[in-house]
Image: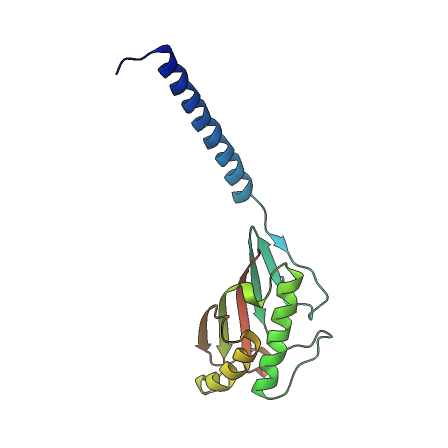
Length: 161
């Protein structure tokens, strides 16, 4: 194929468009990948007792710290496992909503329980919150003990859509 003026012009236009497209993608990803995490400060749940945030938003994800069964005023839920699960999941819902996500957009959940025998009872309450169709990836991790003698702790990652 011989190179004509038309072919050279077309080749130059295609190369320029490719370079401009690559530059635009570079700028878009550069801005996305260099965004700083945003640490959540909220009064919808109890203030953390340690040096951490209830959640951190980074790009299109919300990373929720471990949630223990505290009421918003900071008092402990000293009830049954089922009551503690409800308090934790209510707090998870509030944190997700405050951070721009919700239960339906959860990507991953990690549940810590003090006894693997708690799994069926925890799972029953969990299912009430999530329903049949919302099933984020999940791990249930038996642990020896949790802070303040609680029976459950939950951490999660939600998508921000």
